[in-house]
Length: 254
Image (cartoon, rainbow, N blue to C red; front, side, top):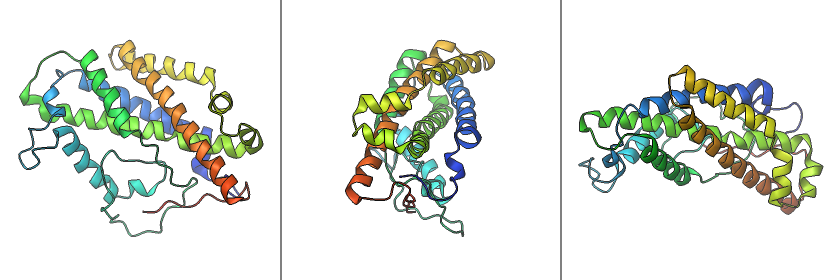
């Protein structure tokens, strides 16, 4: 439970994780602001716009194309990354040693939940109506938002592993009880900083602060769920295997 020897750099909250979260915050707010320039364009989220795939919405078609490219470049060999679409048949094209992951594979399965939330957000925050000329730009903004949210909430697995490795005994004492795990992982001051940062970024990019904060509050809640799920899995894994709490996490498979 945790890595042996020196700490994996990806688990460093200050030097690695928080800078990644800060960069993603900018990227997500920019993509959200761009999305609100277009009407709802709800046709994008229903089958019918892709002649060769009559049962596939344009959004899922576009996500699949982009995620297959990312898979070929090795994105999903990292255990903290997840895809919305099936990229299992895509093999990385880069010749290199398989990355050493600080956490085991632990899919959060939040893809559908993210899409559902995001579509509700579009209906609330984007102007009603459709503009077929802007379907391509719209779905490009959609993909950027969704990939950013997916990466951000799944970084919670790295956060969880870092916290778990720092004090495994206290987490074991929870015996997997959600409320007790939440008490150990949640920092209300940090959550307040995230909300304030979302407001600042929205103003900086001339975007409605309330629209940005709604997304970041949802991401905070979802990230907590991801962390709890991950910690429960790690506790059960350690108990079932009778493993050394300092044993190295199993590497992810490509």
